[in-house]
Image (cartoon, rainbow, N blue to C red; front, side, top):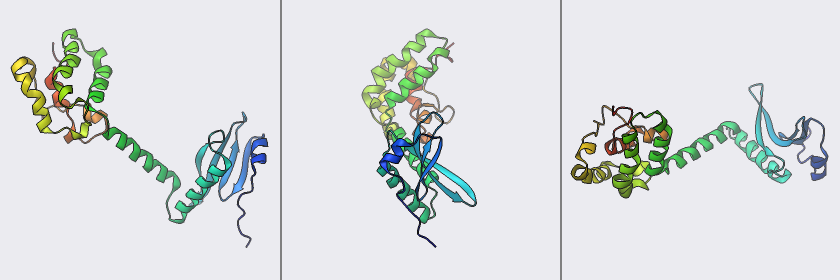
Length: 209
């Protein structure tokens, strides 16, 4: 049985490829030419009798040499019984989770307000959200990652409010009865959600009627 040939393509053949279809480089790597002339790299293999196709990037971004490195990495994963597509999906999901964990409370709160403000009927309470958060909450943990916020920090933010704004502070809901959605928006565990502080800062305008 003849050895599988690799490196069939050259920089010149890649550049001159014009017709729609696939140009094989060997080892599962193909240059894909679209109907409009666009070119991209794909890696193909068979799994349980079905053809699997994984995109490796456009030619204008990924060179022939880089595409070969990517294809080699895919072949090595397959050698270990790992699906390259699932491996990439897992890494991307992990990256998104890591990025979400780094989101600050200020970013979450501002995003929550921007997303819900249009539906709030009480203009006075709508204005209290950002002002009260800025005065009492952000100085304590506004720039901390949502996951880093614990009960002690929440109490530090609430204590001055009991003296200055007892009416606002009295609106703190029971945690087991009403969970805030700020942490959930960042895809973080419910037990880490700091929304009770946001509710403590100002009652939801949609409820303050």
